Length: 144
Image 1 (cartoon, rainbow, N blue to C red):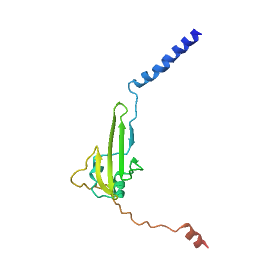
Image 2: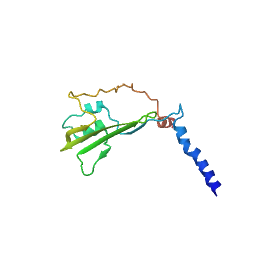
Image 3: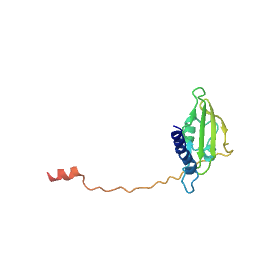
Image 4: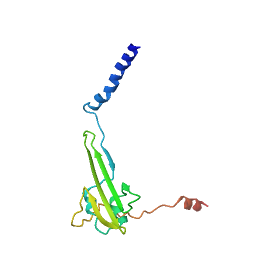
């Protein structure tokens, strides 16, 4: 009986150490994990006092957390963990509304004093009108 317990004990030791060995192997790719709303300073710089909830939704996207009991507070939370690092970077911002307009902003970012308009990289291209040959229906009706 003791031999079986001893055998199982020796069998469990390599299995437990596999995670320690695999976690420390060189040249093993570890993915970056990003969660939540991507928040950066350019997004915050576009926010202005008295903006409506709809305008904030357009700039920031849907909030990560809307408290049922505090409908006038939107929380945006972003966390990032690089695969090779142990540290987790977390950024958050809370937007408070009054009468469906921005009242205040709190968090890791502060809006700039000067309004910043986001430039658009969209380009318009004019497509020339295409001259089509006869359709299949027109070809068939011409035969009869």
